[in-house]
Length: 306
Image: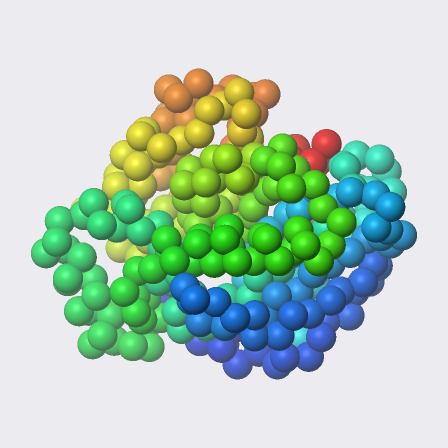
């Protein structure tokens, strides 16, 4: 119950975040307010550019979900942040990653869960279960789950067919798969996994931190994780051309994830992924928070961007 309340609080308070522009500790941030879309509701997009950004060079691009939580704790609901600008700058200065910009895509508050829940696995569930999940959500709007019908295919259409062309036209980017990555945590981890599977020609790597395999808050007799694993068996991209990073902690909501991540790892192994193109890490004592993700962000960034 405590994990549920914390997760619900996150969903609710994300809707109340101020539109104040985050202050980068290094580099600069440009905001595109209420970026329009034919597929999903408008949302802010914050683009981080490293120190010395120049149109004379070309940059890889990392797309990150929950963009309002990435750069500046002074503007977030829980006064925590991923510290993306600090970590990227440190790795760049040490020569451990290639030149890269970060596109922070804000979530849309109450529709976050429906935007991020992988749609094909959801639609593979028995129709009666789909209806039940949506019905329960309508009876309990405070939960933040399934506020609208699952529409992550539309969300990915927005990222790939609207936002990416804009970013590539506005900034000096490398447009190919080898230089396009996606990352997120919790439900953002799920949608990152789904994105690279649905668009293997677009994304070359995905970082999925504290991946919320249960999909809801039920663990016992929950068919949702198996729907995700079955989807992965069919749609995981070629390990010769793609990279995956997964991790989880052992405290708060993350305490639920280990048995599910073990099953996901089995799928990865069967599909031909090895230490060359796939990492799963366990972090003892770490919880489900931006503070925890900040502490280990350098690991997936270096793995994907070296």
